[in-house]
Length: 358
Image (cartoon, rainbow, N blue to C red; front, side, top):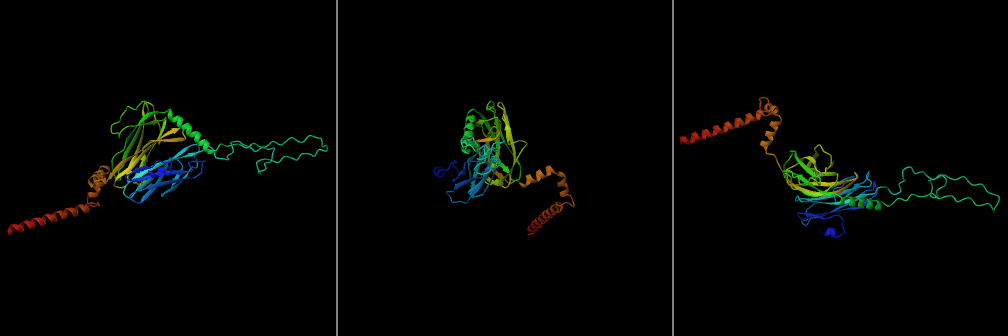
């Protein structure tokens, strides 16, 4: 916990002795401005730590203690960055930080702005030169009217925009009611074999509904539209995750439920691998607020050979018949096994006859 006391804004999460803190600098930027993300992991056992990152928007890259987040194409939104750390003992932790993007870049002209045509800017450009005035012979003539100065558009600082938007989002969240989340994550999977992971979110009028097989029911704030993500914790290559016929953002009815489905295929056999479910509120279609994060342990086994043969036969029985018939690739192997078994039986029979004669 000493990282949080040192002034880091993101919470420190601990797991099996491994801890991590996540921070971003700067935390409020203009659209397109890069952000430096820093992760600090501490392993009391002194094991080697591996880093990885993910973000709900933009693009992020890095595999050590620092990464760079690109905010191009984002304005008036917040991006949640997750820092991951894992060690050689299979322990893994994560922490989050948030970056706010201002609505307008400083110095940008408003749509349709035109330079003032009656004045020449002393700073160069932005206007047209006024024709010289004629010299009046009478000194008592009134001087020419002063040339009006060009008005410069004042753009509010990006910090003020981000804070104003944040206050609006917080006030909106206070009006939301609690719904319920039901996760369905298999605790055991088979390497190379797809499994289904399901998340169901109930509206505030449907929180009493319970689905058999769910791993508990979690109360959380529910908005009209919700976003759900399923991510591997630690090494991204441990699972292949494919959405099954649904969008990441879905409508959640007040008196019903919305369902997210993924096909998850583990890469290799291992114990205590983790899948993380992250849920976000959607505000006016361009601001996301993280309201739920939880990791689930998954043990990945190797499929038995008999099960593999049975599944292959069920999927393509014709190919198996061709395999074992004369001329097939497996016919020679079967003949070799039969000959070997017969030779063993003959040896045992001869050995028994010799002992009876003695």
